[in-house]
Amino acid sequence: DGGITQSPKYLFRKEGQNVTLSCEQNLNHDAMYWYRQDPGQGLRLIYYSQIVNDFQKGDIAEGYSVSREKKESFPLTVTSAQKNPTAFYLCASSRGSTLSYELYFGTGTRLTVT
Amino acid sequence: AQSVTQLGSHVSVSEGALVLLRCNYSSSVPPYLFWYVQYPNQGLQLLLKYTTGATLVKGINGFEAEFKKSETSFHLTKPSAHMSDAAEYFCAVSSLAGGYQKVTFGIGTKLQVIP
Image (cartoon, rainbow over all chains, first blue to last red; front, top):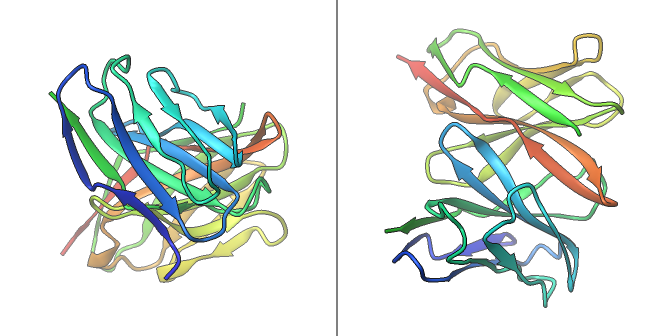
């Protein structure tokens, strides 16, 4: 079945450590996105990518980094510079940059930093 | 910048009652609007979307939404709530940013269905 796989589902890290969240899709979608979800704040866009080797900062990119070396993969690194990294992280993809295309989501990674 | 506002972060309805979740948008161009649903600890899935054409849009699970340009609204409705409708619902708008599609979400509305 086609879809988006995020791993792991739960992740625990100590403060000061970088951590990488995995996102893989087999939908052959061009565009991929990372969102952060916090209670009462909805989804906020961290980074997005429309093609391989190109990505754009979203609304809250500080303290995060991404890469897009392969069409199917878009890993997110949460660096130690991110002041409040504990959150639920969602990866999504869409067929491309046409505005009518909907997003397809993974099941998320819940990151806890102590 | 385009944005959406969801009125009411929590809504409670009785089973069998009408569901109405409100969404207003801000856009300088014709908007592309979406409703997504999220079950606990899951990703989001598309309920329905408005692009062009018919202003009354039907989606999955008996939900529908009406695009009203004069009111800048895209409210989600369902005639009769079911226990399985308990979830969080997000309104979203799609826009161009730097030549790319950017999707902006509202803060979400948690729907509680009371038996």
